Image (tube, rainbow, N blue to C red; front, side):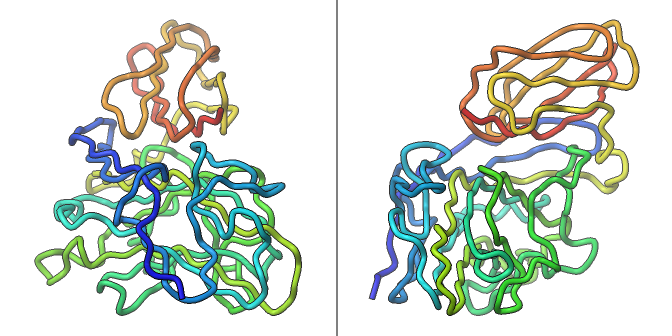
Length: 321
């Protein structure tokens, strides 16, 4: 049997910061895991046959990590077998007690190749240190976010109630269109410290299952797992409105924004969710602004636009290399 493994990961211990926008602030990016240094935050289940491993991918479709060279993958060389159940867990640090004060968000990048609506992956969460788990979409209306605050879209690439696997569980399946950026969060954190909960009782579990039919598929690969808080205030109406279109998304070294109105002064700012300072700036006029020659590491970035000093919104952008 496999023992619980301390896996390869990089923890970025980041100072607290606040990035303000109308209706909310991005606060305190806590943990970012790139799978290049050891950490106890990621634990692979000890059951025999657990496929998850930290390695350099060597398959046809799951061929390379999002942040090379390592990712966590259901076997870095072989296709997944039949009748398999594998999991690993992401565990926030015990000193994250004040993460309960604001809305909590989890994000990650992934690719998958499975038998559609049969085999695949799903996420569960435990609030009692692993005693019980529930699917991350099993929350009452008003508790769970299906749109990122300040983004104005619902493109969080999360499975839905109709995306069922062979077991009846909801999850990811089929073949992804390249790397997918998925994010999820809670408007109301179900357990508060003053009700007996604490940060060290929370466990996020990434589960993979397959049925009894051999289909020669490659499985699931995950990289760049990150956790952060957002203070969205008491109202969520205005914060979900952005007044521009952003494309392409994902992008590589070029992005473009387009507005309905014409502005004399358009100002575009790009920030990482793990950086306070502006890391890219572009100015122009009219109703379209192109930022070319962007040289940024792969990851999630926040694109903020101003028109004639008016805040037009903040959109999420995935940068690829």
